[in-house]
Image (cartoon, rainbow, N blue to C red; front, side):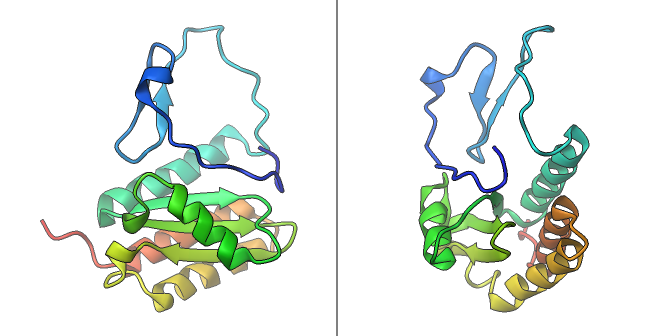
Length: 161
């Protein structure tokens, strides 16, 4: 997906996936391929950047019990409404934090689901946005998103064990 492309979150059924692929409990699709079967990489981000982002999201989810999700692309004339619509389409919207960023329009929206309202609030979201903006100003989108996830997950009370 290129920056500015519109993404549509579509629930994936396990039965429709090829051999070696599964839908994880977080709703992500994970799979393995045979050597030489790799598709052409059209991502605007390097493998290192994608790994950094995935690591930050995974660690934040494990630490907090909240599904952390990032969307990068055009939001619309009403970014808050677009982000709410995207949040409603993830696998467990009540227990999800969505960070939606439209780099070309310089917009960022951070929303938390209903079930985490007592742990994730506007103060936590503002901490994340502030952390992201410092890197965004230096044109480092991935570093900004990783920083936002780390700061917000640190500010959210951990899951009680």
